View 1 (cartoon, helix red, strand yellow):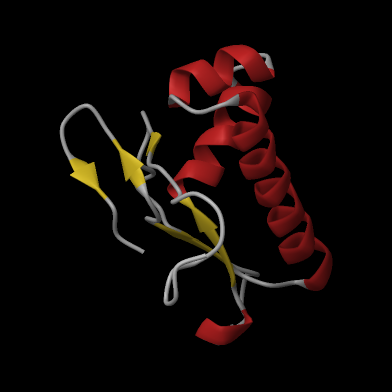
View 2 (tube, rainbow, N blue to C red):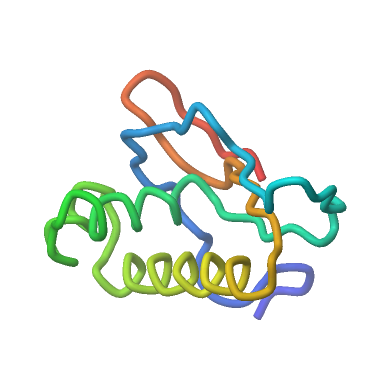
Length: 110
């Protein structure tokens, strides 16, 4: 391994069709600190949207996002764990960019 480099392959961008207009959800009437919130990336939200809202199978959804089924499954599982954690523990959910591409622009913000 080359010094100063991370392990494995570089994380590639995912195709995201839907950027949400609302990026923060929290328990009503409570002030939740920024550090106590769960961060969900646009790609993780897109994975949930495609499978749980649109009803696509994993193969169709991964093709739409331009990633392998294994990578898609990792994103979907991560998103579901984060949402469940926030709901069970009364934490807020923040949706932030991560690495993604859309039809109109490319982004690799973190």
